[in-house]
Image (cartoon, rainbow over all chains, first blue to last red; front, side, top):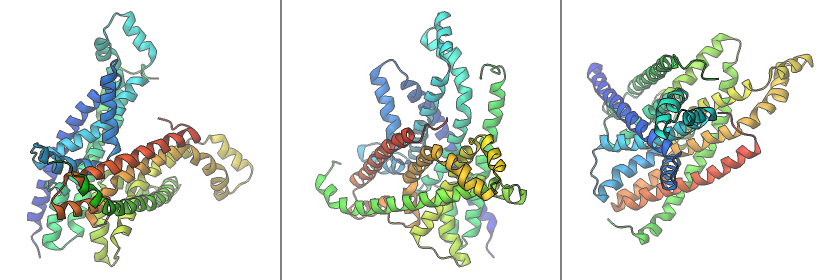
Length: 219
Length: 219
């Protein structure tokens, strides 16, 4: 009879790494989403082109290839990254590209009259964006951002392949040490599902809270 | 570390072998996903709660957990209960099940978009449930959802590198083998990225065409 508590501890340690990666990756993704998403709507051609190239590149190649590239090729160019940094960078940039399209779609879906109202009130471009457009667009983005966050959580499992000790990595260790396959994988499947449920619950709550006061604006 | 074209030509045939497996896995996975998705979508609409609830939960569970872990589960756990699968088959089943749950949502939206009057007319014409589905509902529901389905199949294509984790010799795995035997990572990893970018760009063109041909997807 093996002592499962030790192995469970190992998996929980991995769960901590997974949560850490998801949080840091989400923050980077959120920043990139706004930078690139608003960049695509910029007045300047160079900014638009740069944002489009970033989005198409990261959406066009797979997360897996990007992680490997960040982890194996960047060090040769002189950027030494720890697996955790490589993971956060790869995940954040990848999901950020998807988020950027969400930002662009939401901002563009705000009615033209809102922009005209901004001009009528003599708001600058930035002021109009900050006080009028984004508060409305943010509400439209939230559900999709929630889905993106879940995608990011699921993508974290890939970092186990660049030797980062996340939940999947630990489960594999438990498998190779005990020979039992069912228990470790079933455990982490349930843990991943619990985390995904927590994210979607959190986003729903946030959405309800943010919808207050903007009611009636949305058609 | 500089780029070596001779090395590129040397490894190209091996990588193209991998591309073939990648495309094969994507095609088989897409077919399976389309079938599984339809089955899930139909079962979730079942009036019998003992069927619709568990199927719904199962689909949610699969969508909330990482594909990589599911692949491990299929590849390592199933042999314990006597089901021994070759790596490629296990990979295709994993891809098909995972993306089948996404496809199910597309089917659901497509079916919900068929106007109520069509159901009522089918009833008025005294068609059986089976006839209603095959002759009235599905022929109207499926064409508008083709672009959305194709979108998921492109996404699936980008996730095929995960199959390398369960020893399928697809593009990523070939690249890793080459890289490990020559100790050169820049060319193989970059080429993998380039291959994915090229195929994704082609699929984007195909998607645009599908969207024009079969009507726009609702957002």
